[in-house]
Structures are given as structure tokens and as C-alpha cells.
Length: 125
Image (cartoon, rainbow, N blue to C red; front, side):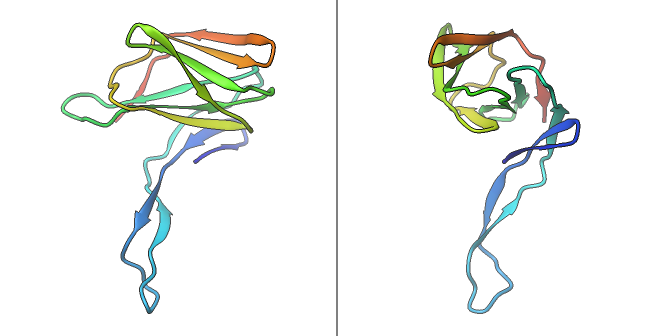
């Protein structure tokens, strides 16, 4: 879940809670409590990188804000550009099997690349 609150952009995850207080018990979703954040922006787009350090084995996660219509975020990692479809006001991308920090980012609309960014220092856990 990515949301803006004033001048901050927040990322938290939902997780399945199999122990419910209702009877009969019914699984439910709840926030995980990791709460990463970065400054919100009026730029066309932004990106935050959440990367774990060894021995953590979780994949790198990207989140950000979209302030103009964007169709895809392209991420440069493992030596190539990989596109990820996005839409709306925010995005959340997990780079399965990748545990580092990407080298760059491009945001595309229907006309081509409209915004770029180089390497972003990660928020670590």
C-alpha cells in the first residue's frame, strides 16, 4: 500500500492474518507495520528503494508517486531495463530474485520516456 499524507509518501504492506477474533474465525488482511517513507514531491514521478542487507533474503521493493499519467516504470537492474506496468497515483514493485539497488529508472507514457532518475540510495531493513 502506497499513500501520500501531506508532505510524505508512505509504504506499508498488507499481510494475511489467519487468527481472527471473530467467530467463526475468518481470515483478514492487516498492515504489517514496516512503514517506510520518503518526502512527497510535485515532480512528475518519484521512487523509493527498500533493500535488505545480508543475511536478509527479501527482494528489493520499489515504491513511488505518479503525478502525471504514467503507463510503465522501467527499472535498470541485472544489466538490462525491465518494464513494469503502473497506473493511478502510486506504485509498488517487487524485483523478484534481485537483492541489490537498481542503477536507474524511467517513466513512460504513451509518447515515450517522460521522466528519468539515476541510482537512488535505499531505505534498508
